[in-house]
Length: 234
Ligand code: SAH
Image (cartoon, rainbow, N blue to C red; front, side, top):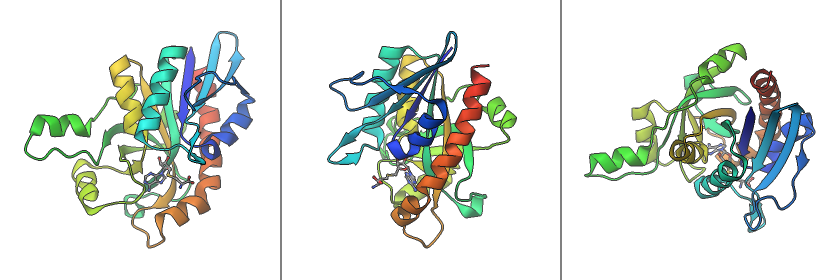
């Protein structure tokens, strides 16, 4: 069994990297910027953690970098399960709280509109399958489940909110559907584990809340992911 995590930012991944004492495989994806950390916690049971790397003096985030990293990881590592883990925005009125960790029960894009063509519109939204074991794992870890919707921006535009509300989105991120899209093409099961850094229905500016809560949310994520890996590799 080989589990491959795709985690956008180094700050999101670091507590998890530290918990498993995984070793960086320098230049594993050269010339791509994504980074690979690996460990073999038990014989024949592998854990890989891939972060998206950096460009323009910032950690890469977003769909393009997530797609590139996921495809590179799937082709190089042949994982049995991909897990996209990271932070997200969510809504207090839907029960979210800072640092709360969720497992995705479904995943789609919220910013890809093709008005006038229903089939392309449907293709744009994606609605990719998540790993069938996701719900059982969430139950074992006593985590709530919710729908992840992905877009290319941190802010929330009214036209995106219309789609999110219509489709029952609960967790807003910038990578989940891109990772799930690549997994749907390559036939690799995908699970998403997300921790809340900011509340979309709060008056605090999103980036401010995100930066303030990034550390806490990443620590919570690492606790959950540590338990998830122990269960999955048991
Ligand atoms: N400038 C910031 C970029 C953070 S982008 C920095 O470099 O520190 C936000 C990241 O957190 C993305 O990877 C995204 O998946 C996630 N995220 C957290 N809150 C989000 C929200 N409200 N909407 C979209 N993505 C969010």
